[in-house]
Image 1 (cartoon, rainbow, N blue to C red):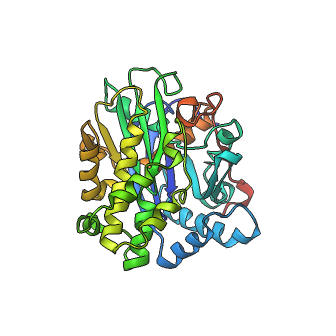
Image 2: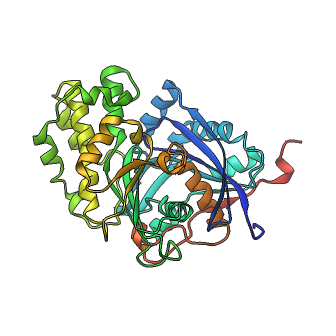
Image 3: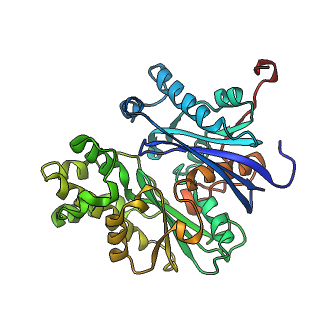
Length: 370
């Protein structure tokens, strides 16, 4: 579909934190990152967030028509400014994720976006991986590998994404390709911003714990953390992935606590689950680079630095945009799908063989607006 060489591609991501749609443009050949381009962000309104929250846990069906239309409309609005893009990567909104039973649901139809925007769209990135026995997540690790190459890293490094759920990618940049055995290990670490954001919204009306101030004013309940770390998820060998609400017991456990103590405990749970996950890395990374909204929480970052034995930095400290890494990742993956290159492998999702996952939808020229 694409000529050989660099492609200008835009990607969009709406994560489980339900804050809004990130969009970003890059130039890539599906291997190297050649250039970073413009970005955009469209927050969900309070009413839109309420609609999306009400749809969490639901599988495809006629009851989600309005939800899908909302997701498609907001993404189209956000991506409409990327007029140079030759291709678009559209992740959709994850409403449910159940890899143990071979299913995942990212709501939104890429064919609709292709028609509205007049540009080919790659979408439904996760289903092929699930069908091949993988977890369907995380998918950003192949992009993280490209970033490690872009950084000219010469020792293992880890990317830690703290969105709604936490996920870690361990990378050996000395390997030639992301699907090479030993190049990548990736897995979800545990809950990240989702339960903390839900707590703040329910108790204070705030969307999140700004600057970690609420958590900083509270006291961590060590007994709750100890019980949390006994969850069976932490004994499962990676690759492994989580649904947004997999740790409902943790949320229930902090319910009796004062808001500040509950926030402190949920924040500590994020850091301690990452520390648990680090034990799975083949070797200690030279540093952990944090992306996602959690990197903007000083209390959480301090807890991570206390819990981990290696340096912890934000991705901005190496010249990257932590707000846009996942949107860039789906732009990068779109080019790989279009060129038949793998987007996941055994080390990232547990899939039986390296697989290229995604659907290509092209606009019908006869239906495009003149």
